[in-house]
Structure formats: C-alpha cells, structure tokens
Image (cartoon, rainbow, N blue to C red; front, side, top):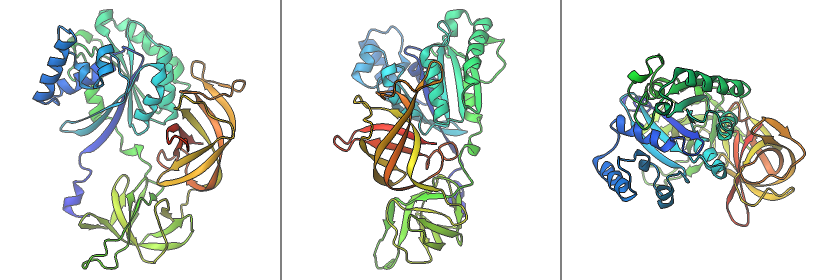
Length: 423
C-alpha cells in the first residue's frame, strides 16, 4: 500500500446515534458536545442565538443545532433524523439525532442502522421508561456493539449518586436480557455540560470517563467483520478511453473482510471462479483492500458480471436461498399484508418477494413473543418469512450487518415499508 493511501483510514470514523424518550435532552446533548468541543462555526452560533431569541429563550438553546425543521423548533421536539459531523484530534464522528416519540421509532431504526455506538438518554427524575426499553431492544436487535446510557439532568436531582446507582440497577435488570456486548453509564447534565466534554466537580463520586473521552477511545476496529470477504458490485467501470481501451473493472465497497491480488474469487450468483488481477483506488493500485474501502477490482477472466452480483472468496461463500426468515421493523402507516408482494433490496441487488408467514410480534415492554396478534403495523417489530423471486446471497445479521440486512419497498407507492435483519 502506498504511503499516500496508508493515511486513508488513519483517522478512525465513529458513527453514533442518540435515543431516549421525549424531552430527555438528546438534541441538547449533541449541541453541548459540539459547543464544548469547539466544533461550531461562528455563523452557526450566530444563527442559533438569533433563533433562540425568536422563540423566547433567555439563553442560547443548543438543541437548535440539530432541530432544523420549523415544526421541531416550534414544538421543542425532534421529528426527523438529523445528522451532524465533527472531528477531534483523535477521531471523526457522524452523529444521528433521532426522535423520542413512539410514532417516530422507525426514525430511530434508520439512524441506528449503521451506528457503532448508541447513546441512550435517561432523565434522572423519571428513570427507566417504556421508550428506554424500546430503544435498548432496538439497539440490541440492530447489533450495535456499544451502548452508553447517559443519565441526564443530574442537576435536577442534586447530582445524587444514589439516584444514579438506582437507575443503573434498573437498566441492568432488563439489559442483561438483551444481546449487547458493551454497556457503559455516564452521569451528565447536557444543559450545564457536566461530564459531557469536561469532567464535573459536582460528581466527585463518579470516577469514570466523560462522554467525549469514551467516544474518542472506545474500541471499534473489531466491530467490522474482518473474516468474510463480501464485495457487492455496484457499478461496472468501462472508461473506453484511448488510455484504457479494454479496461473492465467492478466498483463497489468492501462490505466485510479483505481481499488481495491473486485471491481465488467466486462470482455470485453465476458461480464462476477466477482470480483478482488488480485492485484500483483512484489513481493508485493496491495490493490489498479491506472493509470499508471503496475500490475497483479487475479479474483475470472475462466473466459476465453486473450490478447486484457479489464477489466472494471461493473458500468462503455466504448462504444462498429464496426463502429467508427475518426480524422486521415496520415503517409504514399501512400494515403488513399477509402474502403481500414487495420489492426487496439487499446490498446492491433488487428482487420481488412475498410475505409467506408472520411468526410473532415482539412485546417491547416484556421482551416476550406475541403469537396471538399477528397484524404488523407501524413501528411493530416482528419475525416474518419471505419467498424471494431469486436467491439472495446473505449472512446472518449477527455475523454481518451489511449482507444480513434488507429493506422492503411498496411496489405501488415506492415507499420504504420495513427494514429487516436476516436470522
């Protein structure tokens, strides 16, 4: 790998999402994080100062940094998923600020689908609520490797250690039933900035790191599947120029694993085998590529390959089937139609599918399976079976978040109706 390219992933990118119930302070926390880490431009600061004055706030309302819709600012709530980007000397960050209302649970799924870390806020006055459990379950379902519970508004309970420990114990009671690998707890006041970027002297009893320190140092490199090489083809590169008259490459992103020049490759769904000839990255030629790099791969043999095909190592192929079981989060106001037909999008491949059965719905409050009421409506989470018009080449979501995820689209309206995790 060239010296120029060796810096490609030098600054690690961490994606995190915020979640929690309404008014738990998610937008304020992100505003505080950006403000105290000096990640706000002067014009942005001026804009939120003016917006704060217009809506009658005595002090600058940092929540306005992410609440961009007029309805959000008028009501003081988050409706849409807001993305913000910032960097510190240690890491780059992408933040997804998601809504707390039950009817916007689908937005939380959208924001959390690619996250390395979920920050779930809990109001220190109210403790664990239904939405706390709902969002914790979704974080577990989406296999987010790290969950940080921020016990917010500690200033309103006099920074009491006893209250923090009580809430922590309540969370431990239900989170132990979930599939979350790494759980952390931080007592904070997003409004005042306690333990967000700077350590607070008001919580001398807390010896753990601040939130930003956690985000900067939490280990995420092992979160990516480095074992199973999966390369969904997004585009066939044919420049047909004087310089490259016969060039045929296959562009896409390495979804997982790694590949090097000379590796034996199988093309799915055709099953033809060949070897990697070159790996191109802009004007460079690499010896090896790994997730999540976007590269163009050329092969030694001329094989008919198009968008939707997948390159894998010949000794490590994924599952292939037209029948798949998955957990879905239903997004649409129109409920799921048993034996209804939908478009299914998996990696770079599209197909049509039919819902053959609904096995159960999840009761988020009790974490029990409901087999009596099988009507799946908006924000419901359920296990379903699909029959697809062509084989999907997939891994289970637990082993590969990229090749184990799908979305369902209504054929008539072209609306995304569900996100699914293959079991």
